[in-house]
Length: 171
Image (cartoon, rainbow, N blue to C red):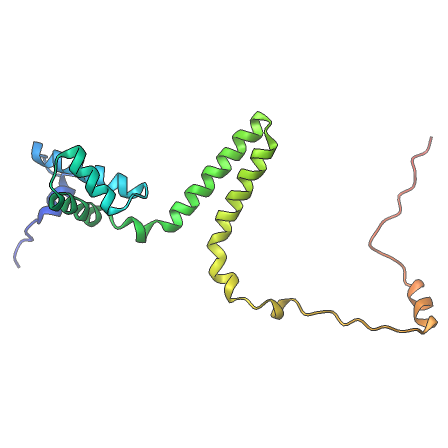
């Protein structure tokens, strides 16, 4: 019916993906948005990002928070999207540290790095582990005690099958 009118974010996206020619003002705006997004992505709070935008880019507080809002609108909220991805990234970094320590011969550091990676990776299953009931899958075995010697003699006649006899090599 009516052609869709591009809003501000649509214009920015068109400039980022190369569908539209970016003006110098748009390039500057995209750089500020990318700067804010990279700081948010590295774990900084919105308040810290706003202060950095004020100090490094010369923006007012309201302009800085608008840039932060635009970066979240364009790229998504990092706190919601990539918590699991961030954990996986940290686990992979610890594995990489472990491999480098192992290559250099520092086994103590390698073991510690691998242990931290395993701890981070196990954090993914915490919700499942809390739901499981250990009594459901670990029933206590029933042990019957007797003083009857015939039971002992009968148990000695049962052949053991959990090992294999190996003959010593011929000399």
